Length: 128
Image (tube, rainbow, N blue to C red; front, side):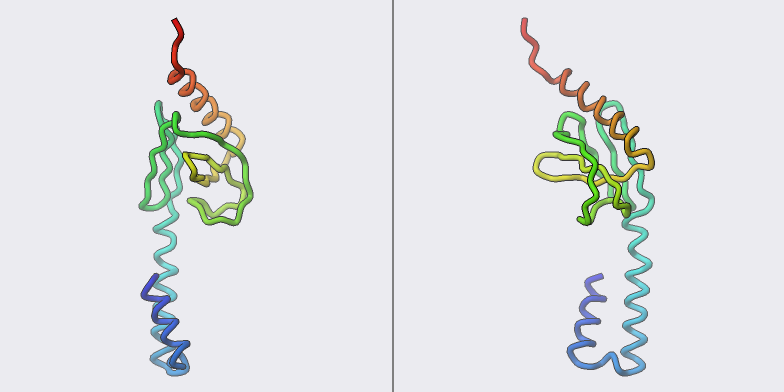
């Protein structure tokens, strides 16, 4: 992607894009980026395991222990995230949000919140 930005910047700066070779290289660079994007986003899978949420988006995988999740709320932000949908859940972990968009937003949120609540009860200090 950085190479495409550099080529486009150079082409615009020098007027090189007016040539046949320049147009061919710009087109190939654009197609290379277009072919790369699906690999960064697909498949997008959310798995609720016994102790953590696993988010897999393309080649990237994030494991979030339930005890580290501070808040789960619906959002329609334009901020880039691990999903292409606008209907998302913002999962607050520390000071960061992980944006996910499962098909059944409400069902996923309820199941995740149940696991987060159980982790909090389990981690709470016991008085005795």
